[in-house]
Length: 230
Image 1 (cartoon, helix red, strand yellow):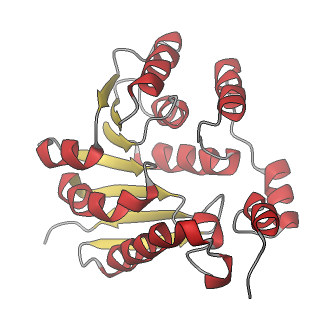
Image 2 (cartoon, one colour; image 1 turned 90 degrees about the vertical axis):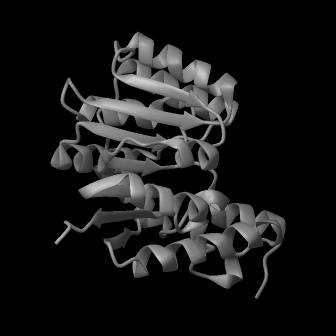
């Protein structure tokens, strides 16, 4: 079975769930955005920046509040929307380190954090996360991964190393528009990303120091907890 490019685009718009499920969740589950965050979402839509879908933002908000992390690492800053979700859900003393290779988009994120009064709680690091992660020697209560999908596999060993025992690793877009779960949806130019994401999920699930589940909301979210040391 194959799809034309037009058919593929229609399928991709619905992400991984049926349209009626998407519509129901969109009407039922909402993240309480501030006016600035609404502006950020509109900016992302107009300029093509990737940000969290509302139901995933709500999910991340709940997970952060449950964990109550003092320190969070984010891979993939974009314009600072997901970082804003995290910082709003953390205790007022909580700190975020966020990495992105696009310095222009990082500047937008910096301004958005500044407008919310988060400038003293966040460190923005420009550069390739694969390189930066190798040199980090601090440990985190929670790590959120939403960077380049083809690189998730290379991030994983560092995320495991940097995550404290009992810490939570959250990764977005792990079903990649459903293509990870269904060969019939794989578009030719995305084959490499799909293969790498499948390998990433396999290693994530099989990792002996992690307990992992995958939640089919948005574009697929994995949630792992690092087992406490014996």
